[in-house]
Amino acid sequence: MRVETTQVATRWRAINAGGVDWAANWRRKVEVRQAHPVGMRDWDGRAQRFARRAAELNSARDPLLRVLAEGVSKDDSALDVGAGAGRYALPLASLAGRVTAVEPSPGMRAALAGALAERGVESVSVVAGTWQEAVVEPHDVVMCAHVLYFVADVVPFIEKLDTAARRACYIYIRVEGREEPLLPLWEELAGGPFPSEPGFADLYPLLLSLGIRANVRLTPPEGGGGYPDLDEALGQARLQLGLTLDQHEHDGRIREFLREHLVERNGRLSFPTRMQSAVVWWQKE
Image 1 (cartoon, rainbow, N blue to C red):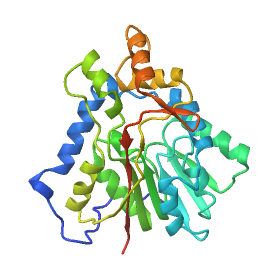
Image 2 (image 1 turned 180 degrees about the horizontal axis):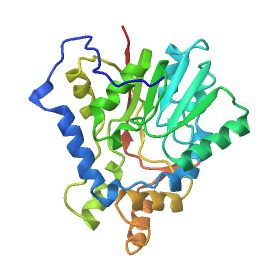
Image 3 (image 1 turned 90 degrees about the horizontal axis):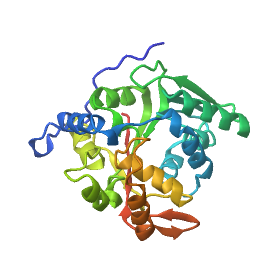
């Protein structure tokens, strides 16, 4: 059965915080970023890195999973929108009775399928395609982690999340931008305003404008970034600085900057900058 996107049901009076068109604000940020090399993403090429991160996830300490564990049971069905290589779809299988993972990238889906087979998990089904294209039935719980940054037409996207959720909808989103630790290097190498992605400060007033008054739980402050070695940190920094695969003229300076600023923490390299994400969720009436 096809789930039609309908106008999200207003549970409260819509609030236009600050007199800003928050949907237009979101679209502008996404489009500016996508028009810049910083916004380019080769999801298939990043699948193995995402798979490693999924395998390394500590479910007991992850802020999103801790919130989900309070509201999801084995009697529930759960829908993971933009599941990637399974960072959350895999542990969700131990919380919910049935999980559906929607993912557009073939590389990410292959990594997820491999992890499911390796762990012997049979309760997760994978749907290929973007969320806008996906045909799924309603689930008890719907979640979307670190996906909205790339969605220009965000209101229909959220409306569809809300429509697909029988009981509750969860969104996980950054408070500070991932680029924050690298901004001094950006100013040195590129200059001008960084094309930042939208985040929690843009999402919450947008939800208010839709009549959704969501719960929020901020994560404990953490160091920015997290890499197994300097080479991976260099590769990720190059992406965040908008450098293409064949642009290596700044590698020496980037490596020097990383050596100066990264610290070792629990066997990984990370920036000491204190950063947070937010778990945003609302119950259906």
